[in-house]
Length: 305
Image 1 (cartoon, rainbow, N blue to C red):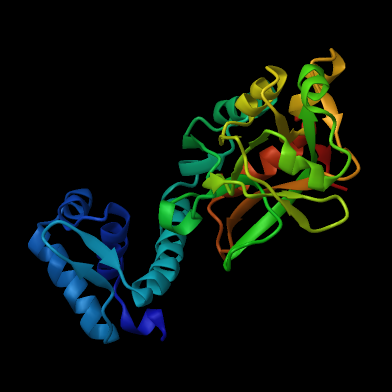
Image 2 (cartoon, rainbow, N blue to C red):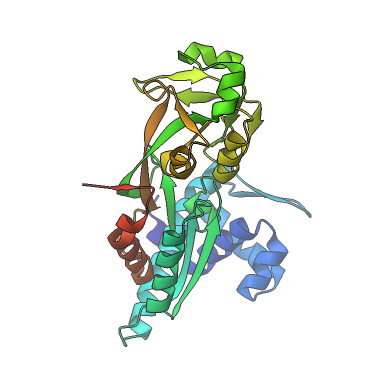
C-alpha cells in the first residue's frame, strides 16, 4: 500500500484525531469540523483502502488491527508534514513547537535541573513532561521522547543509550536479625519481598539473577514508586530490589545492607527512546542532544562509553 497514492491529508488527520480522542465528537471539535464531515472523511478513507479501520458505536470507538498499522504510519507522516511546514514558515532560527516527553518518576534534582535548563534555553517550545513508571506507547500516546530503562525496542523506535545503573537487593539489619539472612536465591521464598512493577504496569513476579535467568517471587508488597520501596525496606518490612543509587545513602548510614549482592541484581540501561523518522522535528533533536550532553550529572548513572 502506497500511502502517498491512496490517501489525502484531511482523511489522515480525521483518522489520527479519531484514534487519539477515542470519540468522534471530541475529534471533530479538535479539528474544528462538524461530526458529519469527520464521519464522511473516515468512511472515504476506509473505502479507499478497502478495509475496516475503526469500529464505531454511539458511545465508543475501537481500532482494528488494520487501523493500528495505519495509525503508526499516519502519525509519522503527519508529524513530518507539521515539522517541515513549521520550518518553512519560520526562518528566524528559533526552535519551537510541541514536545511531549515521558520520564520515570525519579526524585533527582539533577533531572529536574536538566528539564528546567532546556525550557529556559528554548522558550518557544511547548514542553509537556509526563512522569510515570509505565512504558508509554510513543505513537499511540502521542509522545516524542521517552526516558526509560530498556533492553528491547518496539518496531519503529530508536534508543540512544545514556548510561547504566545497578539494581540490587537490600534489607534493614533489624529485619535480617529477626528473619535470618538468605544464603541463596531459593531462600527468598521464606522472606517478605518488596517488589516494583514490571514495565511499570503490573507487580513483578521475578527478580533477575546476576549470572542470567530469574528467580520467581511472591511479593508481600508491590508498588511502582521506587522511593516507597526504599522506605519500606528501611522500616524493616522486607527485602527490596531497588536501584543502587537510591539505596546508597541508607546503606552508608547503616539503615540498609545489601542482600545476596553476587546473586540477585542486574545492570539496567537507561536510554532516550524516540520514533525512527526520516525528518525529526528540531525540538525533538534539541531535547535529545541536550539531555545526552548533561546525563553525567545524574548520580544514578554510569555514563555510556
